[in-house]
Image 1 (cartoon, rainbow, N blue to C red):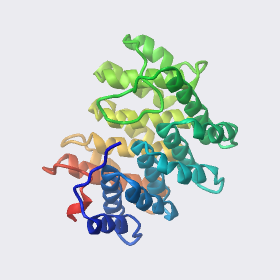
Image 2 (image 1 turned 90 degrees about the horizontal axis):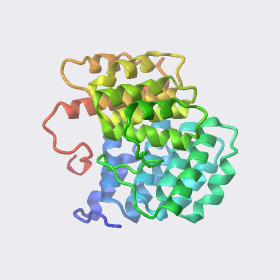
Image 3 (image 1 turned 135 degrees about the horizontal axis):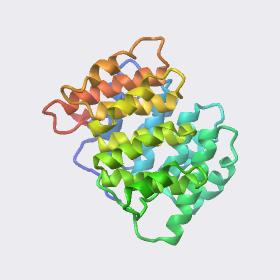
Image 4 (image 1 turned 120 degrees about the vertical axis):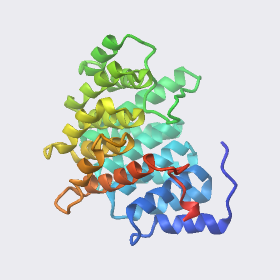
Length: 303
């Protein structure tokens, strides 16, 4: 495991303090979080973990995601604590479970097995999926990789037929693990037909599944998914967990002429659920970045 050492202790502390400062705009704190993720190492993990005390469920969810993507066992105790706390928001506990699976190792199996029976559907389904991923890793020593650089909760299927993959994606008789494999294969193909197939998963009965579909559509960042993502974001009856992911996905594909910024700006009022409103704030910041000359989104060291 390698870390970025091109920084001073003063710089790292400055970024850490920005992350945990509730008086700073959320978009600045997100940039600080991803800067710490890019640095890595124990001190970065310690700073990132402090943000679990924040009031923003969105920030805490993203904190758990970043700890998982680091794949550093040093994060296991804090993620286990977060998953185990039934008083925490489901979106945060779910992400902690997924992060534990991203880190992997036998030490987390007992924890995931326990919460695979959790009364909260998003937590329960995530832990079941995570256990399947751990079993897959035990039987397959080769490390999965993808062009997006993410540690995914399931490997991509080897199938390349888009219609077959779409059928598997939408087949609720299959395990979530098998359906996720189809999802990531469609993401990796990333042409218009596969993206439209992916977007059809936004009508699934599982909020966890719909949220993951929105996330991978954000990774692909294709305008072919704009209408489906917008429809889910606009639905006030949709789970905030799904709407938040749709908002961030729209932010990632923003380009002049799509009208994404105007759509996202509709949800900045206080009567919008906090996790959705904050996601739109972050998505607008991402859209600004996507339409700018900036070299790196996570660049809090220069602030």
